[in-house]
Amino acid sequence: MGGRAERVAARSAPPVINPCPPGQVGGQYRPLSESEIRAIYGTALRLLEDLGMGDVPEILEKQLIAHGAKKNDRGRIVFPASMVEGIITNAAMIFTLHGRDPARSIEVGGDKVYFGTGGAAVQTLDLDMQVYRPSTLRDLYDFTRLQDTLTNVSWFTRCCVATDVPRVIDLDVNTAYALLRGTTKPVATSFTVAETIAPIVKMFDMALGADGAFSKRPFVKAHISPVISPMRFGEDAVEVALECMKHNIPISCITAAQSGATAPATLAGFLAQSLAETLGSLIMVNVFEPGYPMVFSNWPLVIDLRSGAFCGGGGEISVLNAASAQISNWLGLPSGVASSMTDAKAIDAQYGMEKGISALAAGLAGGNLIYESSGMTASLLGVSFEAFLLDDEMHSHIYRVLRGVEVSDETLGYDTICAAVLGVGHFLGEKNTLGAMERDYFYPSLADRDDPRTWAEKGGTDAWSRARERVRDILANHEPEYVEASVDRDIREAFNILL
Image (cartoon, rainbow, N blue to C red):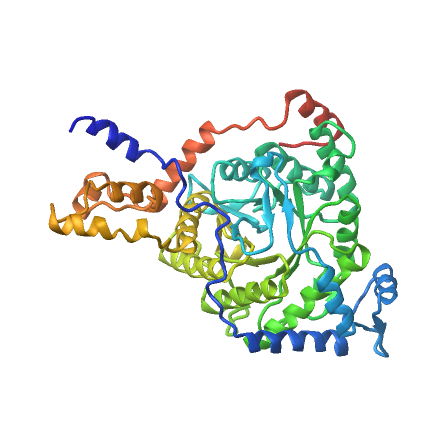
């Protein structure tokens, strides 16, 4: 018919319409029944009312008591169920996580699912040597600009710790600067101590060009663990949370109990305690400012009870995080859970199996923000450049699963089926087929779909090798200029920027 070369070239290019974009609807997987959720929730309320929270800082204790909490004879702060349920009712249900580029902002809450990052890896899988070494500030910046090109990283949390920056203030400032310089997506970081927050907000204001500009439209979220399992507050983290609130920084209050160690080994008991602890964080935030933007980040973690080692991958951690997402969504709170925390050190079969199971479970359960989902290896101790790309492709497949099947007269294709059966006997070249090809199917670029002979003729490479070459190409060519040169000079004069 003519024009075949042009049609082949057009179909080889990325689709005009992404068939599996972020923000798909989750909630199809429900590991818990309604009665089971109510039993877990009821136990969490009893824990807060009868046992309460320990080690409550004085400033928080006064505010809690003023809002209806009480101090029992053991010195613990306990919470009437009515107080807890009132807090939940008035908590933020949906809010915007801003990007410096407004087009990259995302809405947190409801039924939308987004994969993003987390982690504080102290080791990086070296791109050239393929061995683990201490993570550096340069690694952090390279990870930041690498993920800047990836569709399915909807927000970027610093994924590694710059172990070559020893001073606390320099570490926090330079971490924030690397995020500022490397991406315009929503980002997240941790603040070691409360005193580093105000200077970093000043740096963000400088980048935005006006005092107070950051607080009006904050593009950074803070990761904080105000509650230490089992059932007590951490004073330093509480101080960080309250200081973040002064500057209108959205926060993810993360509970990270470990089964059989800091929480019960039984999955139901674990979920009850972990829910009570995350509700403790929600109470803390909302007695100071009702409706403050907080991600209800209830992350169940699992240990191998034979050795005590943290287990990032497996069926238990997958179902626990899925159940956590289900409970948070049942409460109507913006849910944060974790996935892809593989124990694998290499990019191998264990890596793919553990990541695929946990990420799909979290997505199907409807986790609004799914942390740790990109790049992490070695039970969160490591992070890999190649893994970022491989995980991004995995997430496209998961979003395609979440998108499901659209049923209509057009997609049922009755007339098309009849025409093919009575005509040429196949569907190749049909208008219906070509439309579906460009609208409904995801075509991976790293996974190999060639037959064995063609694969061998092309060099017989594995996905790890293909991802490595792609990473090298991105890092060689993607040098974002998100901070103007004059602003960058001003920031460097005001702060000890080491990058």
